Length: 407
Image (cartoon, rainbow, N blue to C red):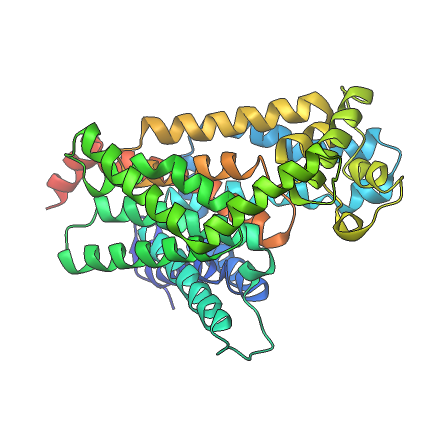
């Protein structure tokens, strides 16, 4: 029985919903099945607790909502205007996944998101430990964490965890917990240094000043620049990073000699193919499988056989849904970035800002919205903007008066 009420919510159901959302953020990087089971239970408990009705009464639209609705509508429009109905139908996930973003937005305006963020970091740490064990030859398990299915995604998740830990550090007062956050940041940074993904590393480099200002909020710009330079020097001394730099230089030399079966060459070809599609179909695009069809319309060898999207979110939306799709994506990213920047001094705003930068940087080399784990990660963190509503409510004068009267 749940007869005890707290602000209109049944206490046991509310507590269970919060724990289920913590489980969802924990399993995000570990297991797709457990992730979606947790999300199903979490939303069911949230609605059962009466939290949804209260959240709707407190609803306030953020700048991201309008472009998000457009992005959600594009696959439905594609089903109506593009000739390949089967392809359009198979990509309707690009529509209904947005329900997660709006759902999490409602929930994060009701429950504190701090436990969710810690759960996410804990999940990334479990995957990191598995990756270390795998590299050392210790792991012999048939099961692999979902985040390790794509090394680009794994690097982005490590990057997100590093910057997120700096935000948590800034808003933490306990020295022991702060020390734990620093240790985890160092460990994840080492994971980036030893991994293959360059997307996450680039995002961390872009956000280094933000990270160090979180750790040293009273430091001068000169000190932050010095510490950032040291961090970059450590990065460049890593054998793995030096190998990747040498590999990139070699790719460029081969590209100059018209050898395109390299990482750089493949991306050039993919982006050129996407650009040609945009030129031919600027208004409506060629549909969600348009790039795949054009790419494979000519014989491909090696890695090129496995490519089905242009490895760039901006080009993917533009080639699939035309320039309106590109405009909606840029609009949403700008809304996320500006919302996070304006509220960066708060816990929730700092997380939104960090996520926006990681997502924007990653979108230049990764489609982001393809793949269940990557797509769900985007939706859950976009929805965390709702936490700004809760934090604003917590510090509103009206609420403080009501609390004083109640006491």
